[in-house]
Length: 176
Image 1 (cartoon, rainbow, N blue to C red):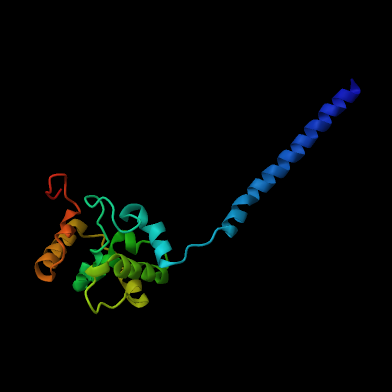
Image 2: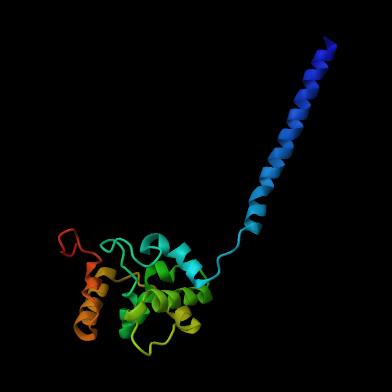
């Protein structure tokens, strides 16, 4: 009987030792996984992580709920207030990215996703411009009203696509 008790206790100790090793190994696993995962530092990668979930991987999503970016966002750069609007939107201005990363992301959105909607001769956002604008987020205005006013001007005076009006419409084509 003594030998069977010693055998059980020895087995328990071995199991506990294996369990401790497993727990220690798992505790260090996040650091190992994080170190091996490539960090997404490209404007396209930052777009996918920060914006793509709502605006879609290619800048197109449910237009009534989230504005399309593809072939549309560039129109806003026809107007000085439209250029600043894009940076000052709360989800943009409060982004957890650095000013440099946000500048790259915005230029990717405008010049890649914006496509033909970007006015000829438009200059890319600069680090200084983005840094200054994002510190004045649009938190005390009606974003919907501000956007509607700009869209009206962009369609009437700059021949922007009427698809800009799809954002914020209900199923019947009327503003919400």
